[in-house]
Image (cartoon, rainbow, N blue to C red; front, side):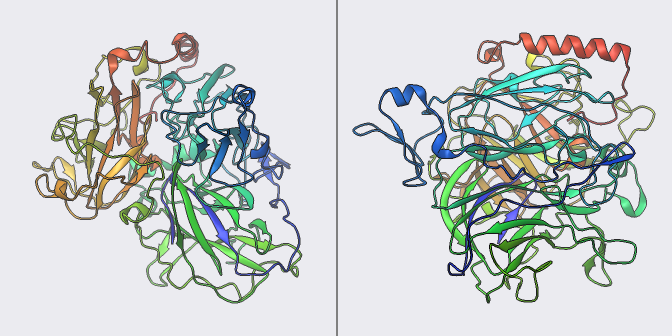
Length: 638
């Protein structure tokens, strides 16, 4: 079972059970439709068929090439650059200390377009360059990526966060308003420029309030070595829950009780912007994302969950899968879902909502989801007989369950190729840095005085507050500043490993300050990969639990699930000075305040990153714009 939590990114290659019966690979196919204002316009609603725009064999390394290095990925997928008598750049290279020097690549801009990827109008759908997902941005390992983002949307500011990108010594490029920059106001531009020190795939999305669930997201692929062999790169597949209302309105059902629609309910599942929708007569539109496979070949799928609040179990009927990467970390390959059934011409791709980790309407009487199908996309084999959609030869894998169990909870999975050995002695005070993911038991009147509500937060005592950023005064410009709702935790250490305990069992709920709502939370850290010391559905015990921590090359992630009622023990190296966000990636919880700012080595932030002039410039423009166009902040801002 390939488990996709919110913002968990996997690379898979697929082994076909079929002989070479069919012809060559076709590009990905899918319908084109969107709504722009009141008129119908046709735009791509899938990753463009020209993917990949960069063939790995054409990556450029002028400096290394002049020294005699040559690309070698076409000989072995684990090799990247080789030179006789010199160390290779390959799957075993420690990319945190050794990165090839590539070239400068420049890409995209932000525009506004109202979308309907499943045939239903989307309120205030905002996109990059008129598509959802946004254009696939591609680069090669070691390239310098430059993206100019222009805001043509009057109603909101915007930023772009590069999910999982380490941003070593480029904190100002992390794209979090109120933390690393001010929002980009209408009519203005901000240039993001950063080094691709990692490789694999991830996604980019707005970090302005609730903008990304409305469509401001797209894939980012950094070509590099992989730990498993493959023949055809199918490209990124972004899977999302989808809400027809604007996410800003849907959030009201998180903050305020909307009856059966609380917490916010998703209306559909879309795969690369396409999804079948249940119509009034009970039938579904035939609106499926299609991938064309070539029999006998190994296909590389770059899976991304870009949901607002749902996790999925991913499977492909009649096929096995091998996981080779997770969260920009190459892992030792392992096979999953290995049941082989019959020969067919097309197969369902299933995105089954994970039990108790999704936001879809469920009928307990019929024991089924009321508006969605788990068969959300399909594979078609080249030159196979044409059928409108898979027939009964496409059979769901018998061992696929809907359990909300993260891949990393099995310590034999997600084993990094480049290993870390964690110091068993933490560099910090773990008691201070243990937090409960909690829902406050009372309305907080200071934040939204007209309509106060109870907030999610990361609490380490009964006086803790939710995060509520100041759009116009980002932490990066004054990292020693504290306010009541800045939720800052500072780390001055420049050595070892910092430990953090994230608790889901209300360990610190001594005085009933927090409501006991047991739910899973996907926890995402900016600025560093973290290792998973332990991930357990049982209650954390400060004395007993650490005895079972894993220190020898544990799973390494940028996002991991905090099990409902359990705990997540993580550790990271404090080697990247900056103001870094850590938050739940359920959009409603992050907007409520379930987040912290981890300010690492604050006295080194100004000199340890790029020039802060562009941040100061965009803040001046933002604050001038807000004075002329006042806004009311109704969520945390992230």
